[in-house]
Length: 251
Image (cartoon, rainbow, N blue to C red; front, side, top):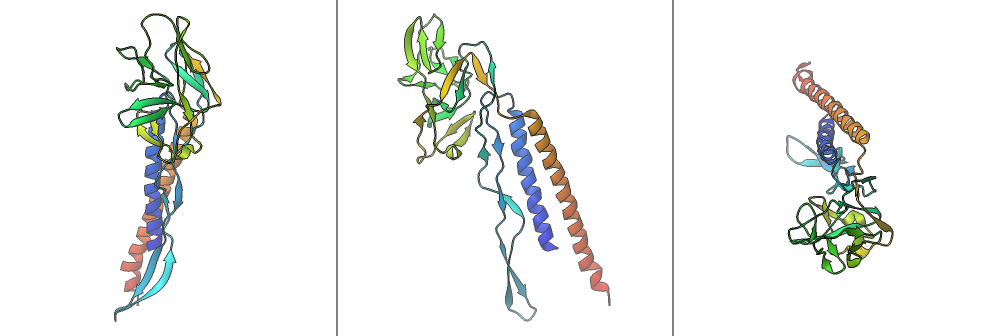
């Protein structure tokens, strides 16, 4: 019975985490370039069991698993979302593999969100104010003229090439970490490489890769699983109460 209580309790905690993750996914369904998070689950660590006697001493009974637990990190689904036309020449979408590179106070970060704008100095920036990096660094655009970005990322104005937008990719995307603002960073063992399999679509935005129906179904499943384990926990508690307070009275 005690094992059943531990198992049901661990499942309750797991479903709470699952609901929080998918609530955040659904909240970002209209965020350009957003990549949904997935919960990774593993068996909980086994616990050692001992029998203690009234006269002292204890006997080792073995090990017993106690339910499930989330892994230390969530996984990110990096599949491409659908591309939607916006008509804004500063909106860019990556069709294929890769990430835009932006400059943050903590160093380079990577994003699939291409809803860019211009700073007061004419620098191409994210909505968070971080410069988008080209092969020559920050991309400063002169005033006036039509901005043209071709499929390879070359930025031109009045027929003159200004720079080429950097698009990079990683051998192991699972090592990328979210830092907020729809940005990712890589660890020291995961270096970016220039992406080879992409094309830039000017005037388009990549939508979130979350399907609304999938998100709602997952939330409903998590809620029902939470209710089921809540009832199981209550049943285990009632059985334990009877074993302690009623069965002990029988002669």
